[in-house]
Length: 107
Image 1 (cartoon, rainbow, N blue to C red):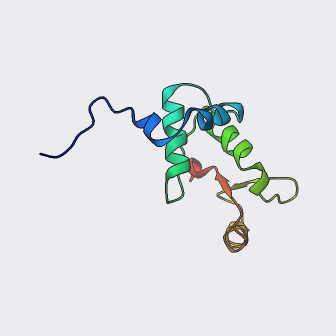
Image 2 (tube, rainbow, N blue to C red):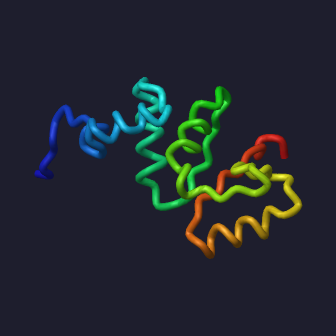
């Protein structure tokens, strides 16, 4: 006899409508899959790997993390093939900054 909640809406259980509204204002599309992906990105304890063929998640993450992204020569995104990737990663980790690495699918 394990207690169970029938018809549980996982989205409303994990995040409130105000947060979803903030995400939408930051550029996250309003469809249910995007909202679920937003939950995975914000609630995960590890660093998420996003497969984003349309670039919607990248735009949202850039907007969401704008205050915490470091820029190098005006660029806030770092390519996986960047020769200074290790240095940039170490800098961000030691300073608590966000780092967006792009182009992973190319390798």
